[in-house]
Amino acid sequence: METKILILEDYKKSGVISAADAEKIKIAADIIRNGGLAALPTETVYGLGGNALMKEASKKIYAAKGRPSDNPLIVHISDISELESIVKEIPEKAALLAEYFWPGPMTMIFKKADIVPYETTGGLDTVAVRFPSHPVAMMIIREAGVPVAAPSANISGRPSTTSGEHCIEDISGRVDAIVDGGSSDIGLESTIIDITGDTPQLLRPGAVTKEMLENVLGVSVTEDIALKGPLAEGERPKAPGMKYRHYAPKAPMILVTAHSKEDVCGISKKILELIKTKEAENKKTALLCSEECLNEIKNDLDRLAESIDIKITGSRDDVKGIAHGLFEYLREFDSDGIDYIVAEGYSEEELGQAVMNRLKKAAAWQLIYV
Ligand code: AMP
Ligand code: MG
Image 1 (spheres, rainbow, N blue to C red):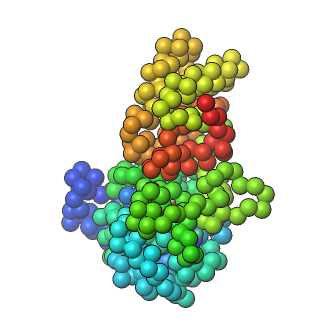
Image 2: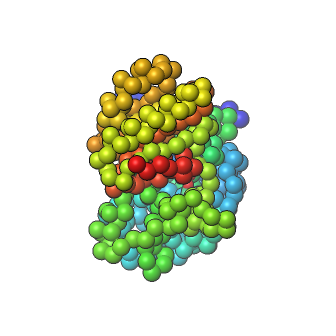
Image 3: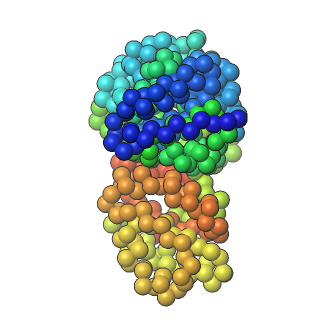
């Protein structure tokens, strides 16, 4: 299949959608309305969009991603009034969260209305809904005139795509169009919260943090088992997608973190020790760490080997910056021909919970606490 690459030149330069950009957005919206697929930028990661009300479109999404069909898609809307038509009921808690966090990086689970096909919800009676805040995503959904099912626009099993280039790398030739609107602001997938039961439950952490949700709801939010550790035989997370080995680079990765969030020194010592061991085994090692951690061990690393592939996530104080670049680094490790990755862990407070969730999954829960 030939994929139309629709680069929003003006939006990428100025953040303003020009008439020329709007023409390209219209092409993508027409494709989606008519049952085709178009990748689109959102503030979290890129989405692979199709008409959520057409079962054939959802089937195409699974095929394009190589995604197991029991892993449901998130349905995106561009106006709160669209919600009523795709869900059975809007619980009070959901209305409250929508008021605070929509449009934005938060997905909620609802009982689905009959018009949403089971192909879109992976066979479930519930549907995940999000109202994104990205102006391009909003315009595409509005112009399409239908709710848009859009999982992350990556090949299943790879890190989510956060730029037009990543989408081209993964899904060019598999979709009708890719809309390139520059780099995703947040860089991590949306927070998923289930408010269908008595107690609100966090299914996936994201930029709308557990603390933020609790502040608005005024009650505590529990966490799904998938967030607590590797799943045992037979254990099923509430978000089916959380059971898959996601975000994982090809090389095995180990995550070094600290009980005390200030212990950069302890983390760096352990990282250095691990790298020394791997170097002695002649393994090509990569390091994913903060400026602060690198400063602690830079001299030793220089003496040890020149070949270590070091990627700096930024400062430990800038969790947003770390989140923003994370998937790009994980992708680069795949192209660098690396045998082993050592990564630094961060505090799990607020946005740190989402960052650590993705890192733990990338490391297949291989964690060392110092
Ligand atoms: P992605 O679109 O790739 O970010 O993945 C969507 C995530 O939402 C996956 O982990 C899905 O399992 C989860 N999800 C979608 N629909 C539902 C639902 N109805 N109930 C629970 N989780 C869902
Ligand atoms: Mg995904």
